[in-house]
Image (cartoon, rainbow, N blue to C red):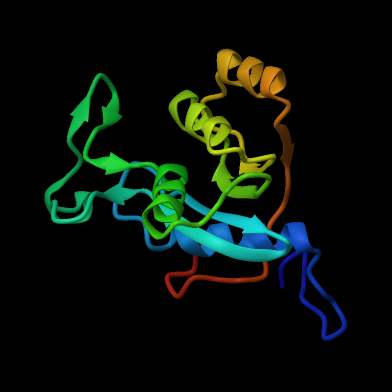
Length: 162
């Protein structure tokens, strides 16, 4: 049994719940280099979600491989961008919302997050931290905090933890 065994009276905190939702979204990722998931939340309600993968009508990395340029897969759009663009596409306001993401946002996503008016970023895993991104978040007054999803008790059918 895992360290965080789920008991009948255990209830996830809101942060753990939404961090878990971002982790579930990452299971939809189509890029083989890294699976990332994101949910945007306002008033304790998910208003959008995204995962990293190909744009509409393009081939998926899972099917044809990644298209790597300068060490980055340019075929995939990032989870944060997908979630923000979903809001733009359907006219959903992001001002003052929270963003839960499996991995620390990159510089480009950080800029989009700030421009979209996101107030709080919650991430689970540090991945390629960028000093300038941190500086921008501080200047913009966007709060950033590491959270834990509490999904250790879930096991993927192949035996790996999700």
